[in-house]
Image (cartoon, rainbow, N blue to C red; front, side, top):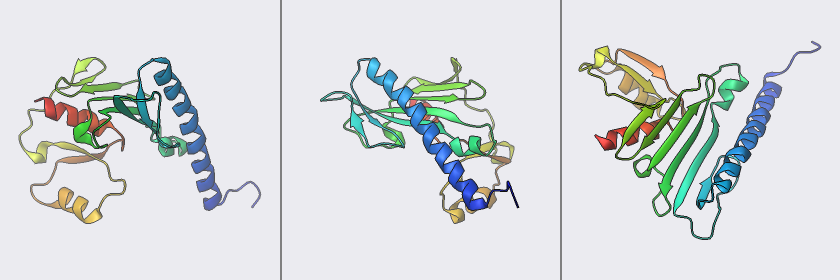
Length: 182
């Protein structure tokens, strides 16, 4: 049929769009980091890790468009995400010192600093007063997870009230930073 796109061709188009979009946004972020004059090692999705000076003190993990596949498919949920760690620590949530997540379509900005809590648009995030899992809303990232473990988490008693899929990016670092400050 003329004008139709095969599933494989559409996947290739989405992957190409994701790559080009991520590279474009990465370039903007990296330029800003370099112009800041602070030395960093920078880790991104689309290029090898590199340093902006001879002996950087911090490592920045950049996800330029967390959710680019969503956007390519018409789901307008995506964020720019950055996490900063000391250069001598492994890349893992418990070592993140600062995190920033900017939701691209709502403009919501989450930021966190270890020991100082997490903020949404400049307002401190608050913990819930909910005491029972049946009354909770849980945000989960289902990407690449063990389905048996997820099934147990969602189905075993006590059952979580509602489950929502979260952005699979660095929001977890903001949450981790908040947890460590309490």
